[in-house]
Image (tube, rainbow, N blue to C red):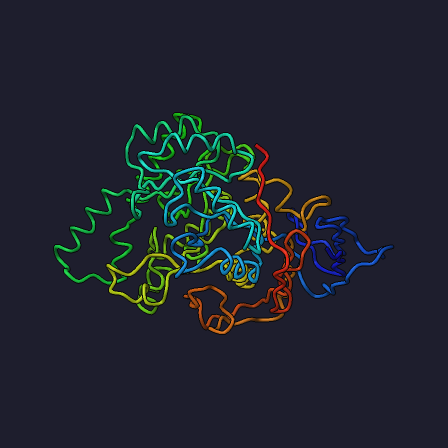
Length: 446
């Protein structure tokens, strides 16, 4: 393992920007220096004119392995992640087969250990009939990021709609419970009503079918279960202004029992974009009317929304170009999430310190991740060197997703990711990958 010193860089950490050096030794951050010389051999990285950030931690991705590897796999998508400055991810259980047993959960960890270039964790999946397997995860609360519940429409039998099962999960789970919240009955009603007057549907109908009310009712229900049982609840991909009344900024994140995530696509796109992008931005929950985007930004900045993620969900080009009702929902984003937020730094919407808080610090705090998410001495050296003066454009030839497309194709970011370090290893540098080292399983202080 090589040791490094990143010299003369702008270190963005814990609400401040410090000019100095960061020394990496044996995979960890050895020292954060104002400036200095090292007495032993290290590889020097020139960080002048650049910003050093803690690696982003994405708490919601779908890497499709096992069973759906025609779309993506853990190797390809982790490779895309590190190219975009994401050094750790938490992956969802809706693979094939779904992760409904402890053996299937550990199978995914084995794949991660063999192939992932980023650090990894995997959620345990829930159904109406695997409660005993779910509760076994309590014994692994230091080794598993959480339990995932689809409290709305999903594929196969991942939807959990039995009130007795939901109550038992919320009452007995000792890990964080992450929920996808959309009300199935509201969605079905809206679809039937729309098809009655409009037999052929199109992408712009998606936020009408999966509307604000469906999201709010499901999120409200999840919160009622959590409050009743004292559960640790994390609601994923908040997409509506109405839901924001359910969350608070009056409690420090470390003390919150109910937290919320916002995804980059809900901060970037609106329903106006269906006209040009169509099914490419079809996702669940839907991208909605512009007033929702404005409200999400306000809640992100005032800390009602706690973390930023992607819900990275790749599908093949053919799957996205089917007629609206058949086209698969989800879009690939993990390679471009940090750069997209740096675009909004340049636009004046958010500070770079706040981006780091929401994509690194707060995710580590929310999930109680051990020794990651900050540029602190003794922590693992998960670091990203970004050049805010070097624009980069999304092109087919520089998209690393296995699906090989992006809804952001043609978009120019104001910044470039120069280097990404995972556990002190420079896995990505100047558009080249070093795949000789793999990421590590995340651990949690619970």
